[in-house]
Length: 444
Image 1 (tube, rainbow, N blue to C red):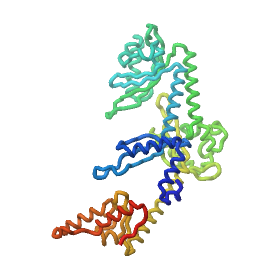
Image 2: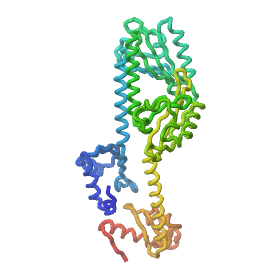
Image 3: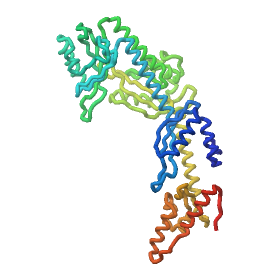
Image 4: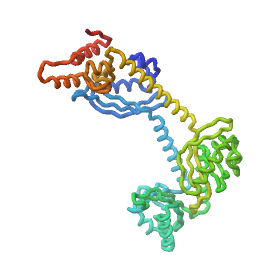
């Protein structure tokens, strides 16, 4: 909304400006009218023509048990909705990829034995998804007797260590035949006492080695696509802190045409060599401790010499045995965000200074100056108004109160005179006249 339109105080013009941006203005106005005729609360969404989505909340405004208006709140949820849509797309892609590679997923509550599986998991074993029922004991009972002992040992070790575990075994299908299955799972949740609660993983039919190889290739391509197309920068280094790889976005930040140009190089070989010691110190700390360093800010020199700001996260890069073999990092350029935050901070400081100046000016004039909201509660009162008319303790006390509050307090101070009244009580009538006429008024 343009500032000049807000300053005009023309509610009709403001509404017209907003309604003109909506995808369905008639529906919006109809809903507003119907809400003003009811006492219902509502939370819904409003679509804009430019694709933005706002969450709308409204509830009746009740004063002294009477509905005197409505409260409205609008919140831009466009980014959240798009994130939800992107998540659904990624989930669908993952589902399609897992079906294409004949893999299923499972989620096991290791404390209750409850097992949840994907549709493909059931089909691998010859079941339709709707008829397949399983729990941890059913899974154990369906394993080939010759494989059961080793399988249980591997499962117990995975629960104990918390690292990803891989198990290969024969399992009985619905028809009674045995299929070789590879299950890969890891603990993803612990209870308050630190005991494993949930294991999640994949379940693949490896009866035919070619099918297994195809599944691995598809999984690799999916992962590579995610890394290559991710808007964040991704990189990984060996124990000597030399680059093993990165995604194209990181290579572009380094001024390179492809990720391969960075392999074997260190930060001292990059345009950000001035920050190399800082980066490597963080890398060494993550590798030595085995503990991730998440979402911290650090500077970087861009290829064109500009100083930019990054939000970086680094985690230990581990092999399949859990050994640390390097460091894996991601970062995003949030220079614009940081600059905007600083500008906002300065703007807020200026606003506070102006507010203090306005307060000082109002408090040092003999005239009484005040402002009320539509419920006749004070939003602002200067020193003269607060002390001379209302008898307030200071200029902040009137905020949120009505004239009646101070009138009753003054009456209580004069119990000997039942006819006692204050000028502030009379002001309530002038407030009503001004609001009713909807124009400035002068009273003597």
